[in-house]
Image (tube, rainbow, N blue to C red; front, side, top):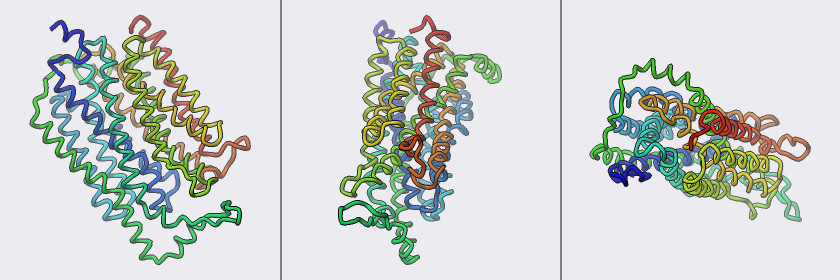
Length: 460
């Protein structure tokens, strides 16, 4: 019993901890299978603007905002296990709806499928995060959540790998139409891609589009089938029931949360953080595309490999920060990580060429700590309020829906390209657009400082 009090994860709940932690892996797959789809849809559905393509993220993360509070009310009335089962069911349904979406070849249908899929993710996140926080001593709750969240980027890496090998790399819309005209020195004069596409027979254009939309839908359909299997495993597994529920009315809980300044600021900060994360991992593809525009085809960079490098950096940072949290105040550590992220973002904006891309990848090291630490600080020392409070922090994921279209708007300033306008004479639109993630990380730094000096000055 004494060892359980000291353990990061007590032996009595290890099985449940492993099962719940697997959910972090599963929604990581969905998150980063979807990020490259902004670029993929724009290549297949060629009339989409950068703003319209970024609506993929609005649909995906908008589901969190819609379903987080209903999910919290559901698990408050029933149980954590019931919330998990509903979440997995909705997750599988949204993924399997990609089959009729591909058959109808309507962009709006794909957006609706993603929207429903994230209803399920909202249930899972609203359930899993507070459940993990409760599985052991309060003193180690933030560190425990960082540990569980470390498996999320592993799923993200899986999603990226699937997206690259089975979608991006196989798209015919991209490969078929790229024909560059070179001068005798081997320099690019212009790209004849659009001319080639326009001269193809309508039937051939339609066949290529159908093939590519099926490629996009395939991984989601496979994921949906796998999620159904996980649902069955969860249904037959015994999960420990929490007995710390109180009879606080829902209305009173909301009032207490609204009065809690640390919680309110945490929700706002979480929205900005998620916005920064999704923008950095979504528009790295356009950042690389812009670098490739000035390179011979034989020297083209593969965006997915850099996106995966960012995720490996994120995963490494998550494991390192989980270890560091054993020795450092969470708010203090996050403050310095936020400053590091701001510096890396400035490098991605102002440093031209491949060095700027390295800075963009490096941002992920510093973002790794933020989501679970903001979560832990905002919900620290809450009882039954944590269930509803968790919903607010999950709703904050809507930042990932709102920010990418704004970045897409910046890219559309001069046209559909990524360098139609050069700011200060040398900064292309795509580089300048990362001023939005920089602002978001400044907000995280401010919250960290306030948590350290005002909200939890004597807490570790």
